[in-house]
Image 1: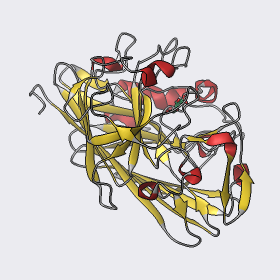
Image 2: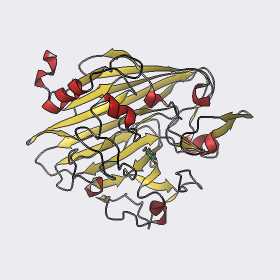
Image 3: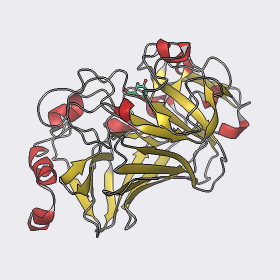
Image 4: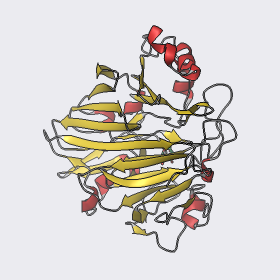
Length: 365
Ligand code: GLA
């Protein structure tokens, strides 16, 4: 415990409160990383979850992630707060896809659809703590052949690194012994103003480097291909408050706000800067870079009633998620060659996403 002494009180409290036994009868294991500037990031082996992220602001440590601080609340929350999502982030229409002429029925957990990997998604698993140091932590998971209906034995690792440049870099590696669609993400929700009851994510200013987004039906399943953002509330190519065009489009009205995938510009295996967001007072900024072709902007439209750290529950829009991933339902759209989520047997899956934070009394750019 002595190593915890220099951490913010909220982080020490998190380690205390998360004590107890998880569903498998063992305690959760938490690891907090701290860099030279005093930023901290805390992770847990259950769900390979990113539990907390604090920035050392003038007024004290600011928690910028939504999250829970008890095991009971971790199991109760249905918002996927900070968890690792797999095998396939977002929806697969009718929980089915075909591959090489064979039909696969996978786990249904949102009506007839598969959301975030199914009933027992990777977020519900105890991951193995593979390796860690004061800079990084690596979690591993073996998903057996047929897990949630998906083909092949898939071995994955998620590596979280807290960089000296105040970034949390998430690297995913995987290999499967059969062809299988794979799309891993982290479902962190952010509020750069601090995770307090009054904060609303719609006050942030947001930029997304994307010319197109993917329209959906009321259950979040894509209804067509990507369409241009131009002349719609989905256009974040020039930074604007999330609130500015909130609920302006019929597409948003269907799902209570933004809950849509963007097709990011410049997709490539390189890690590109794709988004930037800041607080209204310009004191905290977050830049997002990824190797993924797409990201889901979700403005917490269904967060009401979700347990939160401390007392009570979150309200809708308490935080936003920016989940880097392949486009939803890609396994049923082989024509989306720019979002080819099929991991070939015995080939390496490798993707990276970096959330980098800048804070100061200084004005963020
Ligand atoms: C994703 C979905 C949302 C919601 C959340 C989890 O972001 O797109 O519709 O299901 O996960 O609550």
